[in-house]
Amino acid sequence: IISALAHEGLLYQDSRGNAVFLHKDENGKTVGAEIQGTNAEKRYKGVAAGTSDSLFSVTIGTPTKAYIFESAIDLLSFRQLANQQKIQNSVLVSMAGLKPNSLKTLSERGLQLFACVDNDEAGRNFISNNNLTQRNHILKEFGVKDFNELLQKIKQMQQKVVKAPPKPKLTRH
Image 1 (tube, rainbow, N blue to C red):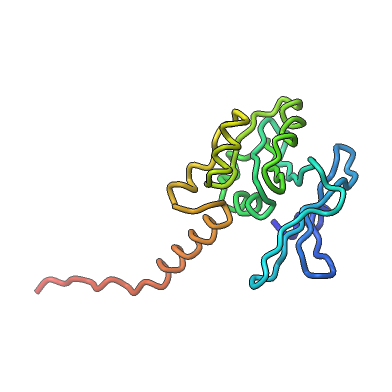
Image 2 (image 1 turned 60 degrees about the horizontal axis):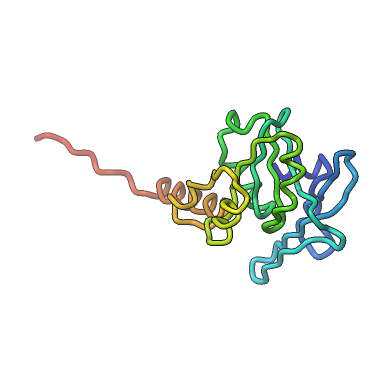
């Protein structure tokens, strides 16, 4: 996923080692960027100067629906976890926060909007205030805040299964 985004000119690493997710307009011109720090000890999230209600987006097929995220990292985690057939003909969108104004362009394109925002009070308020279809139920089921935490939790669960010792075989005497 990362390689494909880099090859498509949507992602690069800046001089500080941050991941930069480019916001493009309908003509492919860069109009903003979401910046995500990669240093685990010092967290950084931000947007490039001049970024307003533009969006980072990944298009899959010919979109009829939009999945909306608070961050590009959550978008990528969802993309990795999602059933690829179910997300065909969609656009995955990061708002770099909760920006209701950024939804207008998507609505005007006639896309069905699905909220995949964080499982917290701000996320719940955003869904309800903007009359969006909720698609983050799985976050509550797994007791996590966002799709990145969900991906990490699933990987941990898979590692535990792999590391589990084999069950002893019962034999009859």
